[in-house]
Length: 244
Image (tube, rainbow, N blue to C red; front, side, top):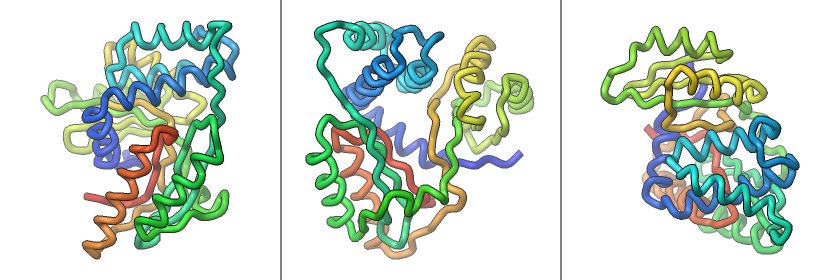
């Protein structure tokens, strides 16, 4: 069965999170706070958005104590954190499509910083909707099979039985995709079967990928991703660069 995402892109994101674990936890904590406030509940069984963020937190090994503490903070009457979701779209060098998802308490700070990153790396920030049409929103679960302990056919059948739409074995990784609305159910069903995830998130998956041939374009694209991911307000950076 054919997959829709590329593990190397997830690997790069995961590697950045491993290298900057504290920053990754801080960003996920912000997502948890927003999910609790918007969902009106600290119980993931009654708050689907919170359940989705918790799956993401577990995949990057965020301690359960941190998750619980953040939920309690969001439920506290003295909590004044007020973040809003903002999405920016644009083009990186060589016409690479880029979507930037942010949670910010100050749009007047975030927008210029995102624009500056695009400008500095030979890209340009575009209008809302200029590239999102070429992405599909999908639940993406990645299981690390570097040791080869898992049987691919067994994982595939377990995934499909759990409600997944697609499965792909990509080298040392087993990638499962599903409808975003089915994400939490698929995660829960697979966790009950004993699986853990290297990555678990609702992603913007490109319909096609672009390769960059020029060394300058490659360096600028790497710099653009790094600048955006280093921004405290930026939660996710999705793009269609095939950086194999």
